[in-house]
Image (cartoon, rainbow, N blue to C red; front, side, top):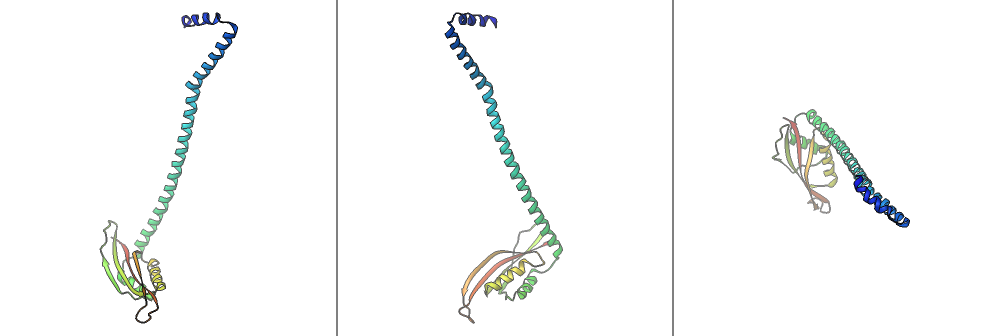
Length: 187
């Protein structure tokens, strides 16, 4: 190493005092640039990247916590529904719908059984219910009776069509309503 420094030392010794100061300042600046570019700058950049990774990881953790809470809520609701299905016992869906219609003071026009997908845990029964020339309040009352029934019943595919008047009251605002009701029983 000394053999490389000797020519540099000789050249430096041969410089005038002002030139030595100038070369020393340039040397210090060059050394500072080498240290900055070679060591400090990469460390700062890796620190910034580490902070970004930490921030991203914290965001992912928050998302995972939220998803876990949502999963737990859905799981609890599912367990509640499954318990209601097991406790509700067995019964005839059409009979239950007729009884609920009497409670809501609604006349059912027709009930047609529908095919349903099979499930390994539960058997689903589906019926399409048609109501003709009913008022909105009666329809809402009937749907509420179905949804709040002891038995687990689910209203699906609700269609309403307005009908102005009937034979007995031409000025009445009535509805034709069709919907599907599903019930579930354990296999």
